[in-house]
Length: 308
Ligand code: HSE
Image (spheres, rainbow, N blue to C red):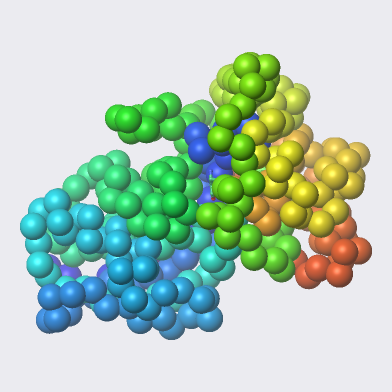
């Protein structure tokens, strides 16, 4: 049996417009890398070989908490080193903590001889995500683990649906050089919404699923609106409203905030438009004196996996 594995897990776009805490998809890139190694210490040790700012204390590290949930379930006392080569920056809105959690539980589960199915590992990864965001949301964890475009129908019990989607959908993702913590970003959203908001939001979620399922690009575009998080969070992304208008003019299907931000994403039905959108995003952030990193990516079916 192997003593050490290098695991990779994809970045993810969660919420996807109207699907607050309910929808997410996995990107072809960027991908996180984590090495998981048995140790003789009967405890979890964190080794950070990246420039990302992550807690070294196992009680505060999302991956370690996720692993502990798996070990507790099977009353296992074995120790593991987690060696981080993070490529997804924390606080970027593309599922950094989720990829750390899925990579960790997937790797340890493999070293233990596959005690859990990939689907069942989600509940352990969620225990880690909880300490990053203060809430149990699986819209980054589920696509990071399983790949594809995911809908979470229910949290209690957890019920995850893999959605069909047009295979030529291209995502433009731009990460402005700002950090927004999910815990802080969630505090911006009111706990209650009106009946009218609930009706408008439900209409968009249902129509987005229908559009994805039938390759109806115009319907996908019309449905990428969000009445719950976007009005409150967009104020913290400089240039957001002008960006939205410019992206519409350049022909994307729709755009929104990726997860809790500050990254933004746009969906297009062709690569040329996706590339134009990346330029528009970059230039709009430069006008606000903000540098950014962009990715143009398909939706990845791969999920979390062994790298080598
Ligand atoms: N659904 C979560 C939120 C995703 O919007 O707070 C966090 O990345």
